[in-house]
Image (cartoon, rainbow, N blue to C red; front, side):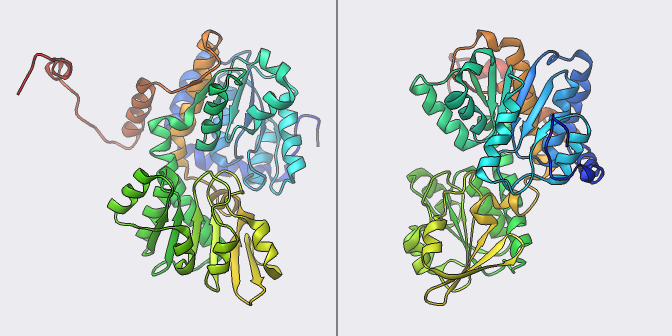
Length: 419
């Protein structure tokens, strides 16, 4: 080890580089931006501290940021999501990275602390743990931070709450709320990668199973779509009336978790809320029920309550723990209740992370250019950026679309036109 990184094993770097090369071949939008901005280097002189899942796709983002001129220090945003091979490859390429799979809570925050030693001028986050660390433990660093970005729904929600309470110390761009992020990454990425994680951890047949999705936001919708496509009977639980109605009209049966617990074969939480599956639900579950989570934090499933009614426990497969309850029923918890798509699989496919990370990259450039004029608020990505990235993505997959004529553009705003 050297002073500027800590990873599982630097000897894994060669394997990690192959993974990164593969991701690059599937991320044409970000590679397009890399080529463009490696020449002008708009991030020259900026120090960026990042806290985001260390995957092959993230590595493409990190190296793109560096090629735009920035100094980068990085940590993972989940104790079980780091790919050790990718982390090693980044370290071997000179990135100050502090991440390995299987972190304890203490180690997780130690890694974040290391990335802050460089006194960043910009931050990049997924879940806002780095931002919260600055605010709660190192508020003095905020004076030197121009702005930051946030990748996920949970983080953005909490940062908007901080803004409302006038507690935000520097401006944040809500990358998650871009159309080219949450309508693609959250839906198609979460749906596919969560199913991937479940299959890797269990190898069960999905066809014919009762598949319970808790939460019908973008991520839950993706899980419902993909599990239905695999032949599951999908049941949705919700607390939001409009979301429940959408699920109903899209062909899924909506019910309370108390009822779904009795019939479900596989349960996945995608809510961002704690205590979604609790003791009374475990009490009602079938023998052999599989439980997992794809929300950002591991508090959606009350694991402590599960342990309280368990007489024995064993790891029966990688990322699959068998809990034998006091009455003899068995419940299988995947990935310790953490993100099943990242802890038990590889996270979202490169193609869908392409636009999300292009948004991250352009948002950092925007903050470097304009951030000093921003208020301490949460900002959205512009419609222009959304459409530009979508256009680039369409070009890379050889799809052409129509354009409005000048007359049509005029007609849009012509309030003198009637029927």
